[in-house]
Amino acid sequence: MPNVAMYAGSFDPITNGHADLIRRSLAFVDRLVVAVATSASKQPLFTTEERVALVRAAAENDPRVEVVHFKGLLIEFAKSQKVKMIIRGLRAASDFEYEYQMALMNRHLSPDVETVFMVPSLDTTYISSSLVREVARFDGDVTSLVHPVVATALKKKFAGMPAT
Image (cartoon, rainbow, N blue to C red; front, side, top):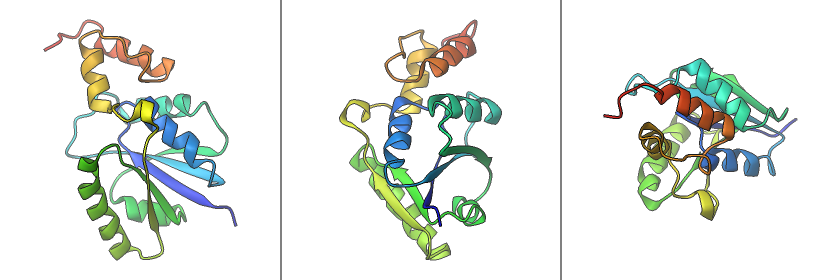
């Protein structure tokens, strides 16, 4: 049976840090489901369809990576996809408390699904989607922070928008 994991997030937009975790996780799984979340509490810059397309581009259409959209509880979606491992990224100690609580709740809801924490590479640790959006909003150079397709999409998205 193939070893399948899930990496979920809003990916608004996907950064080189996310792409790094996708690439590195493929070293120990046969297939990775990248689940693009819809969050009722967030107003994303990119539509769900745009985010899915950008994740596919950043994953460079690797056949081992399946990019899908989901709503609702991640653990329920993971079970529906027959995933036994959820991968979560930890950039800083401040991420740990929230991620730890989520991992424990997911274990409570589905004891057979494990959460694995991965740390980013040193050169991507400081990158977050919110910082990338902020830099792009003010026409800063994000080319070292995101895939070229994402940089182009950000430029288009902010073209003509007031940088308030």
